[in-house]
Image (tube, rainbow, N blue to C red; front, top):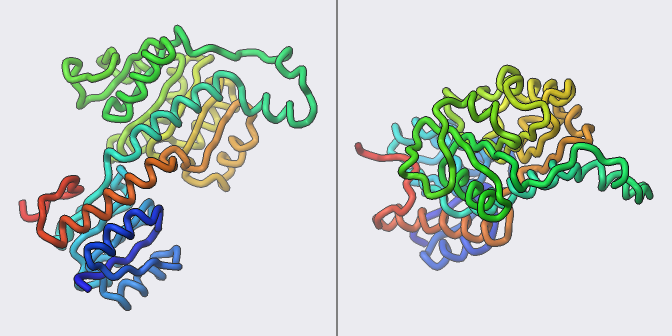
Length: 322
């Protein structure tokens, strides 16, 4: 046994096999809370943590004196306290390339479902109403519509390519860090976010969770959108003020939404949106394709192997010793 790994969420056996082949001893937790994780970390004194969306807190990092690396089976790192990990000299690795296509395809699916009023059609048809198609209003084809992309990184550009070349959509976007000449997708960058909100028939957001973005899609943002616009969110949940989104939908400020992330569906506004027939909601399934799960698990495990064996790190989430 070369080192120990605590796996907080086992996505696929491929990652485990990579670690076993490298001589690791693996512990897959049965817990689901910080308290349980801390207890197991204290017991096993592991060298590595492999997580998915579970929070990795300072208390968890302190629980194992041997901890050298935290590996995320996915792209976003907002569930890991990066500042504290860096202070302690704990390397964070992740899998930023593994689920991009899965999320992009999911976003396109939500656009189609929202534009075709899928939830209402499915519900009515299941009750025996085969003529629901004759009463449908406000259903649209994607061709010729304007897609607005907020956050024009890897996933935003993949969606733009699928939307433009696959569905004949016009794509505009806003990203303060993006440059037009560096775009690898047919996105026409606009100077202000408000221009995108006003022009787009469908808006999809792919913003990181940062102090500048959290809660930035609020009631005033929805007020700037077209009354027949559709809103899509397969990104970070805390970027959108959900109470404001529910209010905008309830008031008819926008026509519909497709959402893969909710902060808490049990809250009042979460329940409201669950009941709306113009809202499609999926439970964070955008990244869960067979291919993406295998890639994410394997890449995270490979990151642990790289750190433990002193090899170059393919996807570092923080910089140690700089």
